[in-house]
Amino acid sequence: MTRSSFLIAVSIFGVAFALQASADDSHMHHAMNGARLAAAASAAWTEGEVRSIDKAAGKITLKHGAMPKFDMPPMTMAYRVKDKAMLDHLKPGDKIKFDVDGAGGEFTVIRLEKEK
Ligand SMILES: [Cu+2]
Image (cartoon, rainbow, N blue to C red; front, top):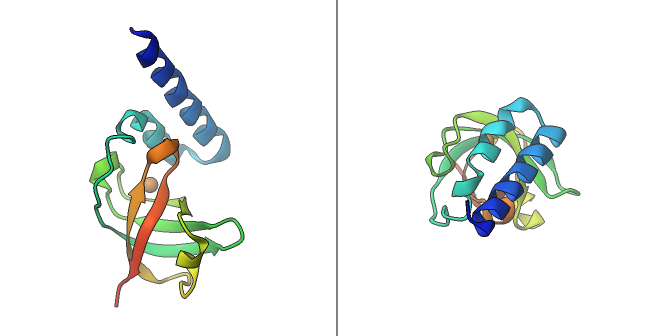
């Protein structure tokens, strides 16, 4: 194991620990696939339904379908949003499609569209 791969492994473990400490077990698969985060830069829409919105924190909880680019099965989880204004005009129950970026080890919704 090279020094850099060791550091990557350590940081992935750190993400796993942070997710485990702050969320439920359903998030563990994200951490286990942490090595793929940096590589997954291309746009890919995922279907989701808004469960709750925290504008102050810039977070949205989504029940979403499978997200192949992160090997993420269907689940409900909270995401950070890139821009809090993305949460305007959204309410629980809304159907959306959204795209997530995993740069920096944090899942962030970088774009979303309301389904008609
Ligand atoms: Cu998820």
